[in-house]
Length: 397
Image 1: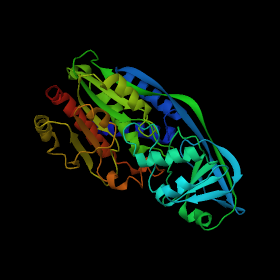
Image 2: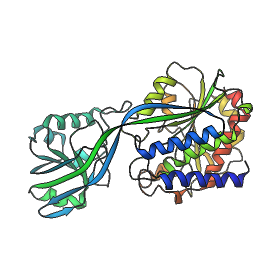
Image 3: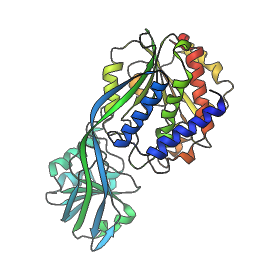
Image 4: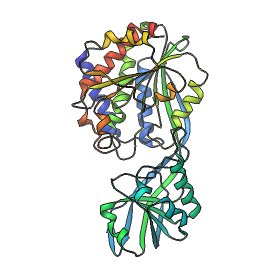
């Protein structure tokens, strides 16, 4: 496909994913729309597809309302919270020691200070779960408040956990200052619920019976409330277009284009499903390439290597020589490639260099829209991966 046609196809796909479909949290109807769209695209390019299904929840959020002393204060439900409709007194807590000594039954716990300085890792998140976080969660579950309200410095949810059953919401310190300085009853209504659902990873392959396998991956889900252009509409687009660029006769190994589902879900169910069924004890995978956050305007593309030996790095080096907009950075230890790296599988990652500085401002927000994408950067990554796969894929194996 010629470059001008490729660029038009990038725009077309990205517009469909981020504008027509939009946010696509794991387990949602829009998430399934992306899966169906991608499967059709892969199959039209003669790739063999597999949907790897798993159980999850679909979170339905219709907002929240908080009334204090007759005044409405701006409040938001925490991701994956259960709902409530109550009026009660409250206790303000700012330290773990205060939480330990508190009596919270029939009250609302209002958390601030050190208790809200960072997002608490979900109870079932498998790879990083500090004891300090789990201690706070355990104490709240033991104290059994009617609800938990977090007063935060930035507009970010402290709780993001479908396994935590106490209703939770958050309010900015500016909006909630009066709560911290006064006492009265709080009326809190959270109009949200969880419902059982299913999600699926989507796997597309050519040459499935070959002994060796190259996996190229991107995640297809988003957080709630974001179009997810950079995170990770461009990654999906790259994989779809690679299926039109790389044919079975071009390579002598299995190529697997893997759309993982759950990177932005609290318990990464798709990632765990794939790891258990396709990585553990599988010695056929010789390399993974992860695309996440590619294409930010006014940013170079960042490439990094993990567990890649010197011989393979030297093989790749000539392909980067004339790539003035692609810069080698230190290993990037965030993303789905870590599933493979922890099992000793070498990884190459592609992202946008500047996103590492702007992640809180853009990623997971409504600002992550199609207008921040530079299509040339996306095209360059598609072309580079195609060259690596076709020209030196055999040597990399």
